Image (spheres, rainbow, N blue to C red):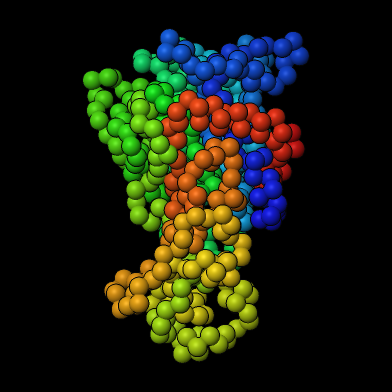
Amino acid sequence: MKNRRDFLRNAFGLGAGLAAAPRLLVAQEHADGSMNMAHERHRAERGGKTVLVETPDVAQLPWRMVGGMKEFHLVAEPVKQELIPGKVVNLWGYNGSVPGPTIQVNQGDRVRIIVDNHLPEPTSMHWHGFEIPIEMDGAPGSSQDPIPPGGRFVYEFTLRQAGTFFYHSHLAMQEMMGMIGVFIMHPKEAYDPPVDKDFAIILQEFAILPNNPIPNSMNMEFNWLTFNGKAGPATTPLIVRLNDRVRLRFINLGMDHHPIHVHGHTVAITGTEGGRQPKATWGPKNTVLVGVAEAYDVEFVANNPGDWMVHCHLPHHMMNQMSSMVGPMTRGSDGMPAGLSMEEGMGMLRNGNATSEENGPSVGRGMGVGSTREQAMGNGPLSADQAVQSMPGMQHEGMKTAAPEVSKDANSVPGFPQDAFMEGPAMAMDKMVEKPETYGLRPGWSGFMQGMMTFLRVLPPEMYDKVTALRERQKATSEPRPGIEHQHQG
């Protein structure tokens, strides 16, 4: 795993290199049938052209033409993924990433999708919402036998629909380990009105307990919330030019609903996981409730310049680690913590050390059950010096926003300090998540971007061109993403 210094040095080789530039879905068929995307570079004009959907932080899945069919290859496999700098977890995904790579096709295409299973147990692939023959549906035990470890299943079907769809394992616990990907069916004729920028974001949640990099797929107290496999502030911002027409596609496959709020703009819901909605149903919104197994498309004209947050509005989803702490919080509190014995309250461990198996993962700080705190801890602002001492991995250099002081009577105010990993200046890590898309953001921005959050950056032409140039430079010199490993054997 890359350490944090390595991450900082390679920051401009991360993230945006996987965000595809808008392009036409036009294949250049080669005689050798080699894998390609071969999409012509294109900035959409409002003249009926379809643009490629961007999935920030997630790659596009290449394909090749074989016998008149577009052939794709997916590998179900274990994945090591870095949610934020220094937080590498063990997930299950496709082709080395969570979510899996994005598939884009045209309405009417016939496709072949080869699925290899490199997991230690059987799996099956469901094409969510597809109107296809039952033997291709991917429901194990009813439409097909599950794919055994080391096995392969070939799916073939013709796509008659258009809209925002997705693929996922049809084994429940595998879904909770991360196994989902975007599947876009572009219409034969571009939607009216056409858009300049089109983005897809998959919403996921994981219960990852202290001292354990493996999600607890049975737990419903989630503490890591992600957009496209990244938690804020590591999510890559959405970059648009002022007055672009924008489409955002939100896909949810988890255990929670997510009310996604778009700052600074009024949007209209133009589609769901069932396809395009009639214009008569469109109406003004700024928050869209994306339920489990649902997808929503929203569209708007980005006519309000600025760096606007896009985030789930459930308060606990606007932070990470809100159910289980890892290490001390940023401020001490008085008294013995509830639910612990006198010895533990005095910091006396009875079995092993603080990270030993005897004191392994548990959930939160219940009243006597699952309470793992060995020292009094709390959360509140730090001074700059205290922040550096307590959290040496954080990047505080160059921050211009001074950490506010706590009032003298803070401990006498009910509700302070909050018992969670909260947002604030002490949590800033601007340099650690630096990439072209963050260029020009206000110093200290990352301290307030924990959880299921990203930016919609509506940029005037000069700044848009500057960020675009940085992205192109990064793409030309990009390296493999640090913190991402997989076992794909080709």
